[in-house]
Length: 292
Image (cartoon, rainbow, N blue to C red; front, side, top):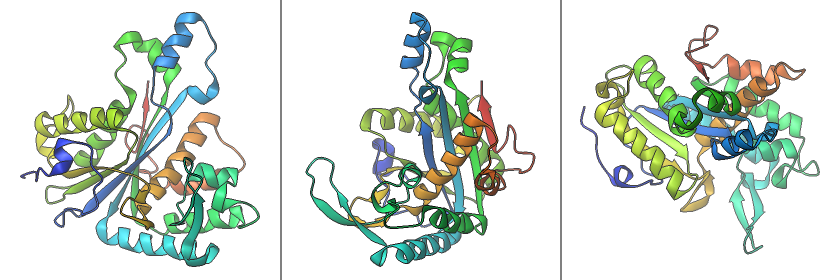
């Protein structure tokens, strides 16, 4: 399989035009921070690590292209149900100027009832039920990595491998080895985080495509046709969002919450996401990797 080396291969790039021969898209999002420097500083100085800084989750949602079209349409119908034309006047954080944009489902904002998700505008619980119904009825497959950073750093100390590339490698190894077959081709879309971090991640993926990893050979990684670093909104059109990233954000938080806090009264949210984990119900070590 020959990789088409476009701009995405040279630098982190938003992928707007997708390789027409690829039949799968993997959307990846995170919860928590992957940075280990603060963990190291706390341990060295004997400072208790705040719970908010202890955990990291990276989640990939694999969707066939045809199914992605269906999900996109269903999610946009939900947006149009709650907001006029599915849009909201977002205020720019730097300029304070409002701009009409397509509503973007970011679970933290939904949970905090912020912006378009204010209780004055919508019923938060009804919205969450509608989103979960789409996920429940969609053909998607989830692969996720979770890490207690304190335990991880205590185990490896300064030998600890950077957590985001490690988590991504674990997800991609499982996807290209067990969820795709030889004829399949994959577009991988990650949420853009910044040029420095994105360059590190891109180089790690390209290295896997060229040389493979310790566990998986390069032949299987060559199923990856494109790697994009996309914002939640399409940069050229604020009236469009990358719905797959919104779904990945939603799924990632439910997994993060469950593994951080344990079972709770609203586990019905997690159970719907759990059923989509690769190899459910025997997903441990497969659809869900705990990094220790």
